Structures are given as C-alpha cells and as structure tokens.
Amino acid sequence: MEHNMNLYNDAFEMIKLKIKTIEMRLNDEKRKKIKIGDIICFQNIKTKDKIYAKVINLYNFESFDELYKQFPKTALGYKDDEDANPSDMLEYYSIDQIKKYGVLGIEISLFESNKSRRIHYTKELLKDFAKENLDKDLQKNIEDILK
Image 1 (cartoon, rainbow, N blue to C red):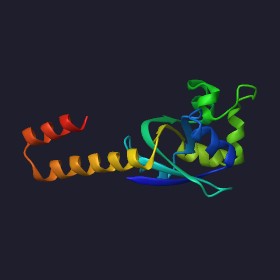
Image 2: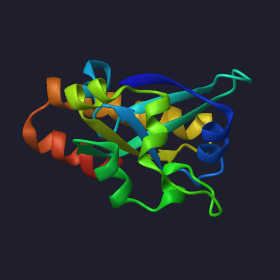
Image 3: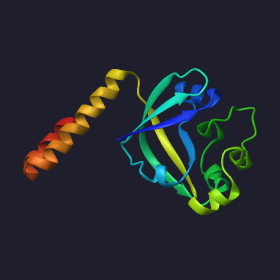
C-alpha cells in the first residue's frame, strides 16, 4: 500500500540525503493503516518534489519524549549542532492529540530510483498473486526467488 505525507523542506532534504531515517507522526487512524513493507510518498510542501521510501519498521510510543530517547537525533531529522527537543512536536500536534493517539516512529529506507520502486511493487504483486492462486509449496518457491 502507498501512503502520502507532506513534509517541510528541511525534513524532506534530510530524508533525501538519507540522514533522517525516522519519520515521527501522531499514531492516528491514518497512520494505523501503515504496515512494514508499505511505500510512503513524501512531498515537499515548498517545491512539490516527491521521494519514495519503504517502511522497514514501526515503533509505537505513548509520547514523543519516549520516542526521542530511543533514536539518535540525526535519525529524527536534527542536525548535529541542534538540540533535539520533544516539545518541538507541539508545533504540529496538541498534547491532547498525543495523549489520545500516542505517537509513531516510522523507520524508512529511501528508494534509489523509480525503477527500484517499480521492482518492489512487482514483487509484492507476485507474492499476493501466489498467496491467492497457488499451493503452499509454489508460494514458498516464489517467495524464495523474490528474496
């Protein structure tokens, strides 16, 4: 499944440079749909440029305080000379929203090209086809081939 997220220019560029590897969001109903292996299309709010990343892990926390303790600040999008402060997230989400939904750390891996993204989609389609149409032995063979 593909998800769309907007980013401010600084965060977008940090992901593009493969420095920021954890996207932080409120764990609301929209984010609860995200699964490992999904694709996120990040759009730069300023330039409208797009980049694509694969979700490689999901981390659930009750607060941004907890999330910030688990990762290096650069992985969260901070520069080495910046202070990483969980209260920065109050610019985007209220305390009530955080208490209601909790927060999500989305670990991502940037696709190198559109070709690599298309290959990923094709593999996922083949796996889905095998699950729906083939017996267990053939499914396993296809999964082994696609590794």
